Amino acid sequence: MPAPKSLVERVPTRLAALIGAAAVGAGAFALPAQAQTPEPEATVVFGEPVEAGADFATGSIVLEFGDDFTPGEHEVFAQLSVYGNGWELADGETGDGACLMEMVPPQAVNCTAEAADAEIEFAFDYTTADVAPGEYDWSLLVAVDDAVLDPVSGTVEVVSPDAGDSPFRYAPLSLEIESGSTVDAGPMYLQDGDLPADTAALVYGVSAPDYILSGTAEVTAPYDNCFDGFAGGPGVTCVVTDFPDQAGAAMVTTQPISFTVFKEVPGPVELCGCFFEVRAVNAEELEAEFGDVPSTGDLFGLGIADGSHDPDDFDEYGSIEITTSPNHPYDLAVDDANIKGDNGDQVTVTIPVENAGPADAWSFFDGPGSYALVGELPKGTEFVSVASDDSAYCREFTGEFVGETLPAIEDRDAADFVCIFTSIPKDASYEVELKVKVTDENANAKGVLQIVAFQNEGYPGAIEVELDDNRADLVLNGTGSGSGKLPTTGSSMTWILAGAAAALVLGVVLFIATRRRKAAPAE
Image (cartoon, rainbow, N blue to C red; front, side):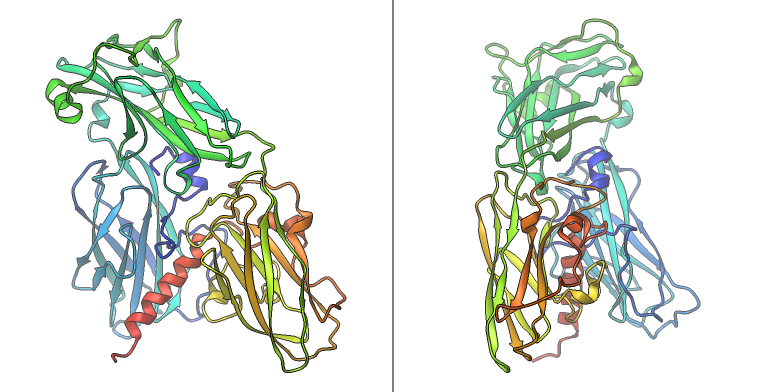
């Protein structure tokens, strides 16, 4: 999602498709790589400057290993992902190895160097043809002989092709909107210099929440000279042919832009670092982009603001923050479950996960989700399997890969399985099918079920207020004592992901799946 840095820093906007999710690192935790695995210094290089609307260019991934790396004896694998609407990566090759579009969406690429040297340079192509100006997160996962190392993350800035010559600066706008309501506003800008002599119109555009948060809110301008869409994404674009021209003056809209938050969206939560932009176009550009623009009727216009305005109050980017009002939570719940069986039986128990509303438990992170059901089995049982429908991604927590790639929890040995949900709409109920083997029918022990919401550096924040029903008992034959080892409900909001968002989980699963496919013997 193209945006000023504020929201993007806290919420790495990630790949929307489930299988397309890949990791973004944050320093709050590390993947447990093998103790003797060499770790490189990693650098990702994009061309400078990276301009919006540009055709394909070539970037590079540079990995420099130390003395603990023996050249020619290791295979090195790297997966680069760039998070944001419109990014597209493509294959590249150097003498060190190749980057290919294998099992990944357009915003990611996989690179492999066999019998690798201590210094590796991968090449990949990328285009920003449909990318708007702003800062975007990228992440890099590296594996040495299948040992996954700590993720590396950074940002890449995309600038407007004429950013250095733009005569416009922007006043930040912050809106608090109650879910289900609309607020009208007119983001203000400063004309910091003279307009080009051939200016035929000013194009005024405002973006709406996009990507993962698409559908939470909309931006509308029901005027004859305004059109749906902005910068390749949702929003509005208005074309003003009768415009003010006064260097040093602050400008306002003569008609408001409407910002609507849909009633299903929870609060409080920041929905977007959206943005607005003004640009001057000449007659040829006006005709090519918009054709005949109405000059009469119900028109959106621009005018000179009253009073004086400090130029220091205007920024290079026109940031718009939309935050929903408090007191509109979701209410997640999990019910007690009873495993009934004799020694040696394999028993399936159904665990319902519900959201009583009034708001949706929205998808705030891409792949594999934003919420998780985590289970600790009671003594006297052994894990066999866990499954759900397409609503959840379920795995044994301590199973191969997943137990090693989920971020650390307060007591990782206590967790036996996890089901991760992208979202849970209000009034929805999902069923998780847990199969266990009974090993001691008289164990009289209690396990724990807990539904948790992922957090990333405080985002999206404490939305849910009713937490008592987030925790339930998992018992054997209707009995059980003790409270289990999993944390109490009061700590659930920050329990499972200590800072880097759910995308890491499936990012590593995708990463490992790619490695497995490459290593599979030919049939």
